Amino acid sequence: MATASVAFKSREDHRKQLELEEARKAGLAPAELDEDGKEINPHIPQYMSSAPWYLNAERPSLKHQRKWKSDPNYTKSWYDRGAKTFQAEKFRKGACENCGALTHDKKACVERPRKLGAKWTGKHIAPDEKIETFELDYDGKRDRWNGYDAASYKHVIQRYEARDEARGKFLKDEQLKKLEEKNNNQNKEDGVSDDEDNEDSLKVDEAKVDESKQMDFAKVEKRVRTTGGGSTGTVRNLRIREDTAKYLLNLDVNSAHYDPKTRSMREDPLPDMDPNEKFYAGDNQNRVSGQALEFKQLNVHAWEAFDKGHDVHMQAAPSQAELLYKNFKINKEKLKSHTKDKIMEKYGNAAADEVIPRELLLGQSEREVEYDRAGRIIKGQEMALPKSKYEEDVYINNHTSVWGSWWKDHQWGYKCCHQNVRNSYCTGAAGIEAAEASADLMKANIARKEATEVRSRSDKHSLRRRLPLHQLWWRNPIPCNSPFLFRRTLFPPILPPLRYR
Image (tube, rainbow, N blue to C red; front, side):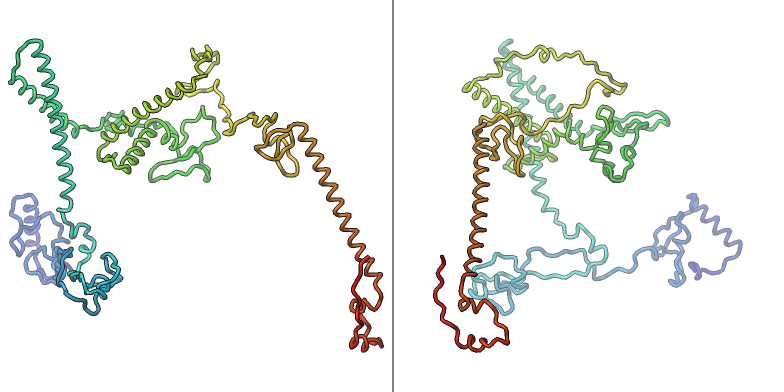
């Protein structure tokens, strides 16, 4: 048990011990001291403060709760980066063939591969690295900051300090310029200059600048008080609780995917629903509209500007990135309008000669539109059918019909001239007659060719029938019991050349 080494106590001693513990917890009696002279918290439970029986604790102590087994091999030191131990003068056996260091081989060498390594040249031998081994415990192996050098981050701090110093100097210069202009205007009117007034106004302006810097860090989110128990919450968390959750709009398993971790549903859960009655159309609709699209364009502009060499970062300096994007849009519009003016000056503007209809000028119509209380359209505005991305009813090359208006023999063509070539010039009725004549001629040629082949095959068979028997002995098999078998095999007749009629 936990307190086996403690001597037996009577009922009276046990009662006194409980009263003493209560007094210590109330602060009426001094706390108990351990073997090192340190006070023991009286509120520690007994099962934690009592030492196990096998430790044979004579006095109260908390040493069994501490880490009393320390690893002597564990150290918090780290590798000495870049340290060298020995510089050799000539190549040694077993060293790296590339640089000549004895602490690694050619495969693990991190130096530039030489055309001729140190093994063959014996020059520029690299020094040996310092090799260290550490026995780290469980915490030491998982210490992310072990061996971290804070001096490596010094250049980042120096960069930001220099930027802040330049910004303060720029603000002071701007204030001085404004004061000089103000004083010059006053001197022109009054003819009197006062240096003390200038100094006082400068101090006031600097105080305003410092106050504005401090106010930037003091901004907090606006909080509102909700109805009910008097709790507060931010504005962005407010939502009408009567609305249907997005994952309950469509309970089909194959519908839009809902991610419960991020509470996002990118696709539209009800794509076939009337757009006028739809309240939620997916998160992608919000990403490609409104300020979300502008913020995405601002990020893309910052990335492209950084790739081209500009020191701009959207997260580090958002105001600078937004100002550069604003100037970029202004310059782009100026260049676009300048190019448009040049083109109109050179070629003219035929669209400006037409008179704009009165309906478009006034923007009014007689169509009745009905809305509900939430501002959604109930009826009066039907969904417009999307047009094709291809040009319709466009006739090219003097054709009177579009491509694909005629079909024959698994090929598309023009109906006006029966041509199968896409960008051909229209030939009209003459082209149709020529195409029919060429088709008839092709059929006649094919029939003539087939008749010629049939006639040639029949002539070959008739010639074979007209040949004498002694010229066809190798073609006609002779029976085994024929008396001419031995003679015709040993002495074949001399065949005259064939003469075709």
